[in-house]
Figure 1 (cartoon, rainbow, N blue to C red):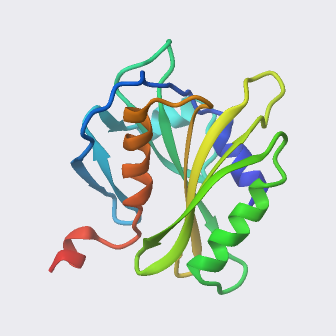
Figure 2: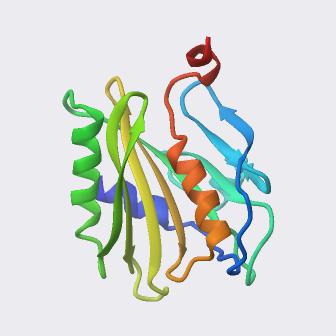
Length: 187
């Protein structure tokens, strides 16, 4: 799991928003048949070819990125897929993910919040770390859950000092993580 976290972080281009506050709401329901979430206005799905061009490993199955840069960087949320070697619950997988990232260089827990993903309680874990010494310390927010024998982790990365609007956009994406078709769930 640590390898997957580090590989997912290697390509993230990050951005911060200013201190302004804006209402953040779902503008686009994303569902690809495997994972889904809700995207706020000003975010898009990164084309797989672009991920391949950046050298992103195949474990990163999708990325969402802000349309507008801030200080020349773009906010990005990646989704990593990991085959499980044993049956486990989303709660167990979430706990294991938190344990794994706690070993990353410069790790400091910032916050944790219990949320529900597909009916199971997991932790939205926020922390700072510096996985690469040649890059600045970064703030990460992460949610992990399972579907069958596959684990999924949504990871957002931002500067340590994050603006309210960007934080709300990232939380909207993470808190709407699902591995169930939203249209089928609504019926």
